[in-house]
Length: 291
Image (cartoon, rainbow, N blue to C red):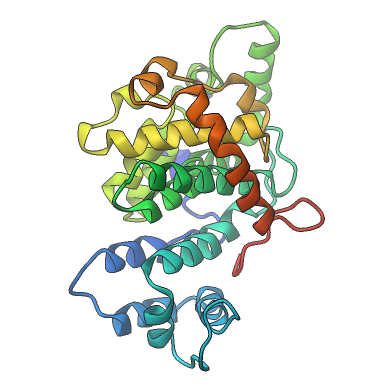
């Protein structure tokens, strides 16, 4: 444990991250409320200029446009909840994930690339498994490592202590080494941040338990296991993987019991790569509307 570096200190400092995604939990809850109309959601999104412009731009794109769409209310009716989820989570959270920050061996944009790869993997898995809300799985994938961003922002200068332990060939995951050095880990920081930002309990559960799905509350275990599977698929594909990826945790037994066989996982790879190509620019970096 490092003097002065407590979970409370890290969470308070991390909560001041530039572009903290305060808008996203409000929109997630509103979109899930059958009594919340499009006008009310439009009023929320208008508070974020980047998100609002992204929604209107997509609604007027060749893919969706039949006639000019001039209001956010019209845009929601045209796009539907699935596209709205993707745009808001991509734009609002993507800005946070794209901030230059040292830690975990990331180059600029790596955390964003890895998080969106996990999101795409989770979305594909959710649809294959007939999960009722694949957009929630997508959003969970984007957010799963938000605690790493918080730790890198708040105490990344101490990460050499973890690297030194790795060089001693200590057989522990990066997360467990975080706990050894700091007395807490990135999942606790992420959970603290999502609670502070008032995200739904399902997303807080993902952030808390994705490395150890057996410990997840039963109500959220299916979603947590999806992100656990998506995380490991994304690491194997290599998009934006930091040095912690070489010390990742994998619950093979639980994955196999749930039907995530190597054959099933491998069959998803061409579709994942195809989806990643849609959001990867010529420089190999992720390009998200509104981010």
